[in-house]
Amino acid sequence: MRPDAACRALLGCLCLALYCLSAAFRFSSDTHEWKKLIMVQHWPETVCEEIKNDCRDPPNYWTIHGLWPDKSEECNRSWPFNLEEIKDLLPEMKTYWPDLIHPSPNRSRFWKHEWEKHGTCAAQVDVLNSQKKYFGKSLALYQKLDLNSVLLKLGIKPSINYYHVRDFEDALTRVYGVIPKIQCLPPRQGEDAQTVGQIELCLTKEDQQLRNCSEPEELLPPTREAWLARAAQSRGLRVCEDGPVFYPPPKKSKR
Ligand SMILES: *[C@@H]1O[C@H](CO)[C@@H](O)[C@H](O)[C@H]1NC(C)=O
Ligand SMILES: *[C@@H]1O[C@H](CO)[C@@H](O)[C@H](O)[C@H]1NC(C)=O
Ligand SMILES: *[C@@H]1O[C@H](CO)[C@@H](O)[C@H](O)[C@H]1NC(C)=O
Image (cartoon, rainbow, N blue to C red; front, side):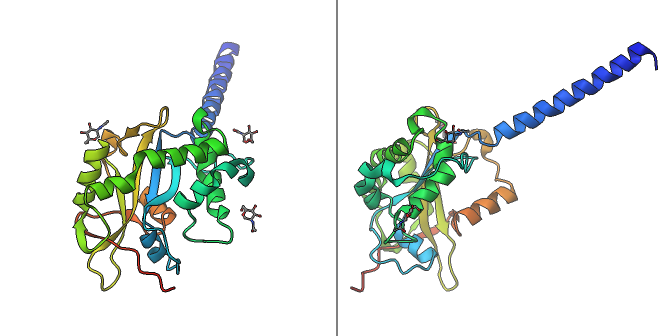
């Protein structure tokens, strides 16, 4: 090989190596990138049903499940949950963000989970970059969106008579001006309707304004893996199918 050819070959290798390195780097920094926030609220009666938990007197209003950045989880394992930081928020947290799965004595387990899994990612934006801000902003958004009053005002209340999924969709789209994602538990054996369980409203990353949950170009169904991952993550809830839906009234307590 002539010296200039050897030189060119070496240069070629170097370029390739640099290219690979930059691709790898881009990949690793992309894994915690996210584009939107999802305000997730759930219907306690359905959550209790889903986990077969003998919830005692679950709230008869929609409560917060979490404020989730899409596409990223557990962004900073060295940022532990600290209940002290949200002391001031506890009365509101207990009312609007209760742990339906593990009720008292230790309600903070759910908040710890939400912080570690989602909050540490949300903290990429300044308005959410502390535990106080993350939980405080979530509570503020819950109040602002006021899902409970919106549904009541539109005449959608828990009932033994079925609604149609479109009743929820149309009503929420009309009020919020964006398309929500409504999730249901599929009918169990012997049941003839799915049960509404969770409502997701999406917000912009930059200024937490309402936006559609899907991009126009995202109307294609998700990949099967993504769908399975999500189904597992949300314990059996899935996007409601077009059709009748049960909005279960809270059972009377047995006390
Ligand atoms: C993770 O959180 C810790 C504690 O707040 C902080 O000091 C550190 O900079 C964070 N790391 C990243 C990559 O954001
Ligand atoms: C409650 O949970 C928090 C966070 O998981 C933990 O730090 C605390 O020790 C727990 N308290 C009790 C009484 O179990
Ligand atoms: C939301 O989606 C609907 C239906 O696809 C569309 O008409 C509307 O313009 C979208 N809104 C925004 C803010 O993108």
